Amino acid sequence: MKAFKRVLAVALSFALALSLVACGGSGDSSSDAAQSVADAVSGAAAGTENVKIGFTAMNLTDPFQITVRDTVKELAEAEGWEFQSGDGNGDNAKQINLIEDMINAGITHLVLCPVSQDGILPALEACQAAGVKVINYDSACADQDLVECYIASDNYSAGKLDAEYLNEKYPEGGELMIINNPKAESVVARVKGLTENLNENFEIVEDAAIETSADVLPKVDDALIAHPNLKFIFGLNDSCGMIALGSAQSAGRDVVVVSVDGSPDCQASISEGGMMATAAQSPITLGEESFKAIKTLVEGGTVEDVEVPCFLISQENISEYDITQWH
Image (cartoon, rainbow, N blue to C red):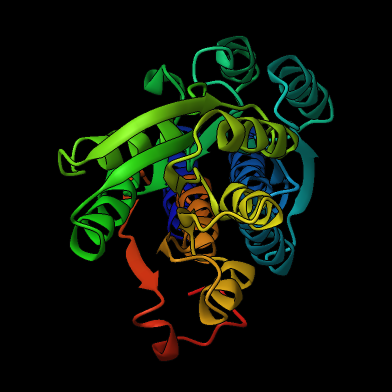
């Protein structure tokens, strides 16, 4: 509304100036000035009414990403805005094609969690050429000059929280496996937070790169065979962590698994003595902040990056949380 009022005020001032110049002349200039006001009002209204939001994440089988999407969708539709989404499904080329389709469908804004921080560049350039404003969330695009803002959890601190928990509870350390995704900036930051803060007694014996959750089970199965003394697993998110836990349990191995997200399923596992801990994020907050950024832009404002804090949910404090929902 603030942007609408500013446009209206400018239009009225312009119309008044035209009418003063037209004094003593024909009545056509006054009509033209009135039409200018009408056009300005119509244009300002169109700025808020013709918003079309596209949404795509690296993998929409992930409950975390689904929650972000659903939050943005609910808020956008409550505003009367159009909304469409597409799943990158761990495939950079597929995600680029999805975004190009959305551009052709007339989106005005894109909420994006990229499959690849570098590989997404052609899609960002296409958005810029089409005038589509990009809100980058969760995992940073390599070229931040092509997005309006970056909204994410403090991913480094998520890894650090898991590391500090392991240091305190298991100071003697042991062999550790990391489930990683080097293409995702958010995961790179989590792994860095973990490795830079583990004590020297932890030995990383596997750093397994995956692209989708389907890659996790065979990687963990192989690691359990290759490393009979494997004691710890870090999952890049709760889905990966719980798959890893299932693999270990099936093999009859007692392995400590920590992860990142704070999903209800993971919280339930923690409460049952399965997963040991998760560095919890708030996908609802990420969705809300993404929507707020779009609304600010629509109203003519400027936006800034947002960093959302993480916190640890573990077997020691799980009783403090409602395990049926995100926090």
